[in-house]
Length: 315
Length: 315
Image 1 (cartoon, rainbow over the protein chains, first blue to last red):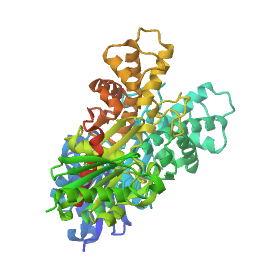
Image 2: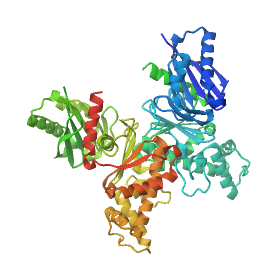
Image 3: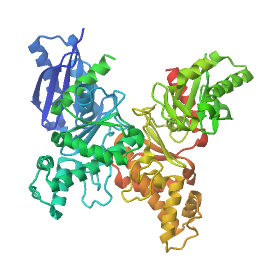
Image 4: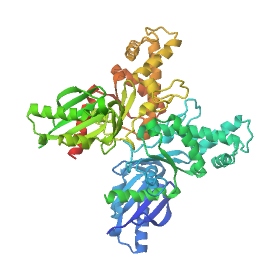
């Protein structure tokens, strides 16, 4: 009986590979480079080869593999059709069919943010919940939505773009998306730095932070040390993110928000600022939504990809 | 073979009943009063009697009925468990099981806003789409979400509360929900009147509208007549609603917004103001989302309730 699965997380420079047993334990993980040249034509053959090589090395038959799950950096609809991955040079095609053709193993695919959310729900900070929103506070602000155990892809695979919820009418600078006042402009790692520079430019309180010379990590370290200017930055960060997540909760009423990405390394203090500022903005029915920290880090994608296979191939 | 269904829409004062054929044509519709006394203990028996009476009248056997669908004014989860309907005096119980016990006919239930959305998708303004948000601009602002043909209920049946998305940081008056700056405060029928009164109080443009004496209908009639103050009110209304719906689209990426409720009787001009103000706030992947008007009016609920049965009992 089939009992192994592969979880693959395709990034713009590296492809993360995971080899899992049926209980969802990762037996081995490794990386291969992402060859994006020529429209990314080598990406799937490289993944297929990595899978074949691992099976040979372990002397495991293909019939013992439930499937290969794969997360990619672009919109993927429920049928496995990729609608362009700019970072990989990919156009529109059926990823599941293509990889199955190469490997002869059932394949399931999804958008990387959604797949990471599934991973956190299965084995990370979202364990015990069925309906979560994973919020990734990294270079940008990404979102992955799981409702009743299933990924919510949206009509064109663009659900969960919560970094572009409008949260400030007064913003004058332009977001990467072309709009103004997007959540990402305040709650991403670069957003925290922007907020810090704005506040420090007018600051009169005692502080160890210097405008133009602090990272998001510096800000949160200072928050933990009780730095007064840093506390003000954290408060504003919490207000923007709390307000944005309250809107998300009004729309889909999840059980929990799982907060991940580089900024989330600040830990529980981050959740305190979000929670405190979320409550005044949210509809009462979603007031008791939980906030937790993601725990899988960069492995969330391979876990979620493996879970895609476990859920759908064996269903 | 079973070929008929009943669609029931339970309101605080009236229960709307619809008797449908298998193609979704309503063969007959009628109303019975909602008896809310004694914790609403009579509501389900009254519905059961209305169904039995109609079947006797038509000399139709229960075996020819696919099922009874029912929409209620409160949160209902995917298992048919009602989590309190304040207007009916109901607590927490399994509505499907209770009505099935009384009638011996399969029952399916849902929140009334969600069920109305399903109705509009099946036979109304949302035809041809699989993923829609129905926005009801009435006394309040309600929302019903259908993704891939299925109702999105949320973890506690509270998804689609889009009237309580925060859209104005500067609001000083309190919304019915206790928060400040909710979409409902500007885009409901009473919201339009509030906006009108605020603008008219400061107005210096020529206008036929009088502060404190105009209804939402008066405002939209004046918009169509080119009244300058009315155009300003419409612009603000569109900005609030466009901004709010842009947030909704960032979260779930629907194919279309179907606009219903009393305010939507203003017609296409309403859509123009929403669309124009939606675009600057939305993420590019959701920029081409369609806006349509609801067409079923107060019958959306009975259509959607019948569709609940057609979808799930025969599935």
